[in-house]
Image (cartoon, rainbow, N blue to C red; front, side):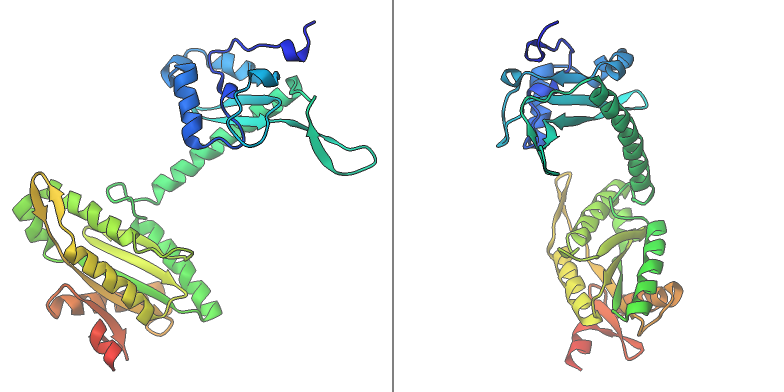
Length: 317
């Protein structure tokens, strides 16, 4: 029987030689591309081999050390779902319990065995299924064109935020925005240009989501977007949306040699002052948005004293 340190690996995918706990995603990708030169398609015909033979490397001298922590042994298995390799699950280094102590310490002589392989294969199968479910859920709440959350998720999220606001009395601001004269824009430049501008305008709105906040941006339908700003008074929310309006106004979207420009009209309402149900609050914000359009477009309006007013006028009063 050979010693553990004499064990070598002949599997076609040896990510163990490059992947350590400190490796970056780029290093992992480089390891797979450069070291193994295998594609997912090449693996499809040999999935049973992968399910039954984990990638186990127990000789430290054969492990390329690319992180700060030494790796004495490594065990990697593929995550497979629907006939495709969707990821890799890796364990590095064994631990042991110190004598007369509950503390776990690094076992530099420890090696991964068959029990470890079977355990990791089972975990990888479960993880692949859960990853697939997470991706399906993400797709179900995301607008394909813009990448923003979709209308169905907006309604569910709004209901939850309102319930939280009614309980805590933290203000919840809702913004409704619409691209001005968008039908005319599509008639002039074509629907493909319109879709391009929609995605760029949506990106600008997504960029307004504040760090360390619960803000969220949505495509409600057509050229209409929404933004939820929890725990935010309407004046602060209006300042955020005014910045968004200015960025859209200043932007030039380059499309097939043309510099395209649009503007947006924005309406804001706050819960619970302007409504404590989804329907009433949305109608208030929508009313403010149409006031922006009727006031000349390319502006932000908010409900103030029960009626929509331009953002600047409301600030001055």
